[in-house]
Structure formats: C-alpha cells, structure tokens
Length: 114
Image (spheres, rainbow, N blue to C red):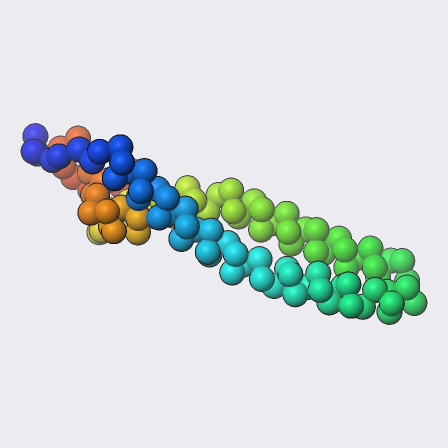
C-alpha cells in the first residue's frame, strides 16, 4: 500500500470553494448571451406588439427551451468536470491542484471511468 497522506477537511473545503468559483465564472459567461437576448426582447417590445402572437410565442418558447437546456447543463457539468479532471493525468480538479491535493485509488493508482 502506498503511504499517501490524506488531505485535511480545511484543504478539501478550500479546493471545493475554488472549484465552485471556477464553475460559477464559467456559467456566468454562458449566461451573458441570455441577458443580451432578454434586453433585445425588452427593447423590441414595441415591435412585438405589431407582430403576430405566434411569432412572439415562438421567440419566448425558444428562449425558455434554451434556458432549460442551460439549467440542465449547469446541473450535469460539475459532475462531468469532477470526473474528467480526477481521471486525467493530473488526478485533481483545478481547486485540488491549487491546494496540492491528488486523488488516488486504494493502491495509489490513478482513478478511471472503468
């Protein structure tokens, strides 16, 4: 058995906070286009009054579906991020790399998806 030292709670907590900040920034950048679309819809509300109800409903529906997809992505992405980073050659997420934490299996080996 490898003589790996376990990371303490404080180091793990700080690593998780760093990862949360990184993911939060990424999600914020993904939300910027939605803010622009919402602003354009608000600015074009006068022209929307002259357009058909079907066109307005289609635009709102498209925005809703896109936002639902983004919400679903934001729920799944942290798990994918964690799994891909831990199974990579670095064996750690960015937060863990900063905190010098490495994730290993029971015998000190790299974790895999299999």
